[in-house]
Length: 162
Image (cartoon, one colour):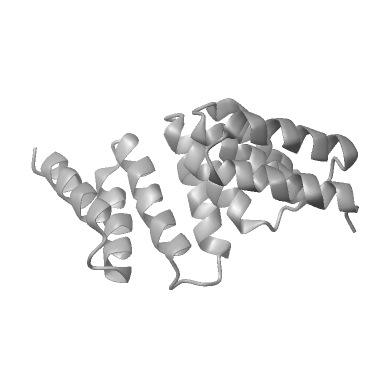
């Protein structure tokens, strides 16, 4: 059970993150981690702050720390895949999204839908257009108004028509 200081610092760090004050948030998160190195929410929050700052390697390390602390943390796997995609590490991102999609239980929520889309983007980056189309079509089946997925589908179809 985390102490009062840990929870207090974390709560303030999270508020700063929401206000887009990433550096201040990261300072407090470092304090939290200094007190309790195994406090998963602080590591997750750090990953998000670094992602927002476009410090992808630091974000990746933070999400990997969450996974090391709790391999069952689905959100950490999702975020790791997203960061890998931002880093244009398409093959690794695809593997992470495949893993996430295989184990994620709620097949009807937004995380599942977005993971299908992000896997499609990874496959598109790998020029595996046939599988990208399958994945993006699955995302569109979940939400016919998924604008980004519809746009990606059009890009994939153009590549397939070449």
